[in-house]
View 1 (cartoon, rainbow, N blue to C red):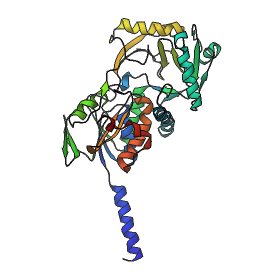
View 2: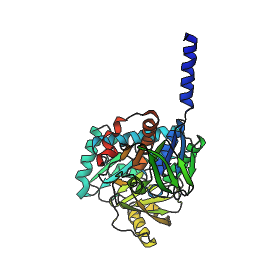
View 3: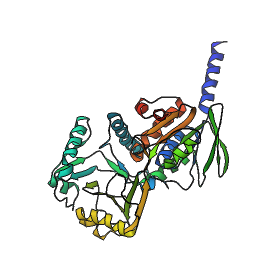
Length: 377
């Protein structure tokens, strides 16, 4: 072979490699599925997203959507979330229509929780997080009109932010579609076919679809789908309630975390508030309970007294059994990728980026080594 023919053959191989489009089916059009779809489509994959109801109908639209790494442990999980925050910064530069509200969060605690807050702040400062203690006068400056009440400890975490989860989701899906991705809904997956130790395709309410890779990012429905292949994705029940107001005049530029009330305002003016981030003690979505949540917020921010309750949402967090993400390929099916996690909003830009690298390049991203599905095998 001459040097010229060798170069021509090599060039042909490279062109064929770039021309190849891996077919990827993503089950679930929540924030994780949308981010994976966007990052794969940006890399040139042939992406189809399947959603059994409508985009965001699960955990995404009921999320408070706090972008943070504030109380994330152990260190490897904290690191994931810090990369997630950076990922939102990157996405806001890539996608002009994405509305990320930066400005940080202000938290304060009564006496019984003050020691834990001080310990968290000390750890975060040691790890290089942009968080520091503040006093009551600083709370008033950061949150105009706020009446914090008795404050034993307070913190300003300036690198944090938030999104309206449905605005962010819609923007990611539209961006993925502009890059060639397809979003099918309502389209329920009713079966997964395998041959030779690999997933071959799925049966859906819109017919059979073949694939080179299958991504399960279906939120709380992921365990059921994975179980059809004898793959364990253990989640635990973690409901959360939020009250949402009708659009109100602009009054809150930062997230506010008071004792018993988490409060933010979306770009469209809607106030969103809940009592905590643990499992809700009630599943009450009545107007009366929504007013109770709003009244707790009004104690600290009287300016929202005119805001009118619009809806109360009950969401079910995608919370793995050990509280940490389940993400990566499954050993029994090397083309089956799982993505199930709490902190889905914070982590979504990072998970989309690294999932694309693992699926398309065969990379094994070290950041995810503690969070593989194999730990539950």
